[in-house]
Length: 230
Image 1 (cartoon, rainbow, N blue to C red):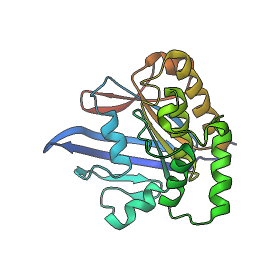
Image 2: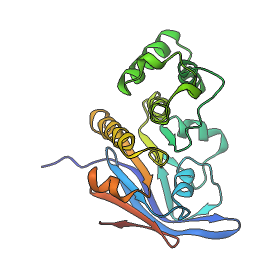
Image 3: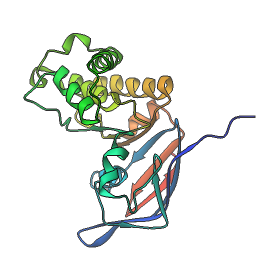
C-alpha cells in the first residue's frame, strides 16, 4: 500500500481582500509534500496575489484554515514570518536579482539572509546550486551580463539555496522564449523529482502544462481558485 503523503499546504474557506474588497473568495485546497502543482489563469486573475498570501506578504485575509509549511498564516506573528520564509523558495518572473553585485554575491546574500554564517557551508551550498542549474561558470558575472534564461536559472538557484520545502514560482517562464521556457521547466521538474521539493507554479502559458504534465492543476478565475483538468 502506498504511503500517505504529508500535507504541506492546507487552505479552507480562505478569502483574500484587496483594496478593502473580497478579491479571491472561499479558497479550499490541499497540496501534499512532493506535489508539482500548476496555478493557471489569465493575467490579473489573482495568481500572484495568492502566492504573495502564502508567503505572508498580504495580511488582509480571513477564513477557517491557512497552514503553510507548519505555519498558520491567518494570524502569523510578524516575528515568525522570516521563519516561514526560510521554508519557502520564491522565484519571480521579473528576477529581482541584486543588480549591483555578482551572481556569487547574490547567492551569498540569500544564505546570510536566512541566518547562515558558516563560510564553508555557504561556499559549498553556492557551488551545489550553481552546478544544479548548470551555471557554475557564471558565478563571477554581473546579472546585467546574463541572458534572461540565465537570470531565471540564477533565480531558481537562489530559491533553492536554503533547501526549501516549497518553491513558489510566479510565472517563471513569462518573459522567456519557448525553447528557454522548456529548459526552465525541465529544471523545475528535476528539482521536484530529485529533491522532493513541493512546487506551486503560476502560469498563463497553457501549452507548458500540456507538454510538462502534472495531474494537479488549480485554476484561478472570476475570484475563485478551484481544481481543474485540461
